[in-house]
Image (cartoon, rainbow, N blue to C red; front, side, top):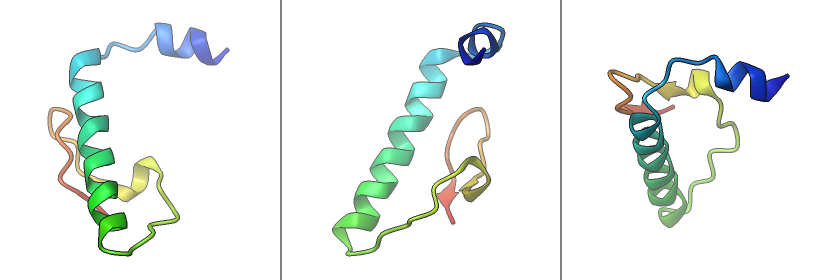
Length: 57
């Protein structure tokens, strides 16, 4: 079922993976500063504008 959902998405996968890379880099910076977010979910990732991550809350 999940694969069917993913197959039907109209996503620019390159942009999606770049956004994920930015999220991971942000988390890396938090962890480097000794901060653990503990609640990563889509609603805590502000704001995708053309798949560019603005901030983690």
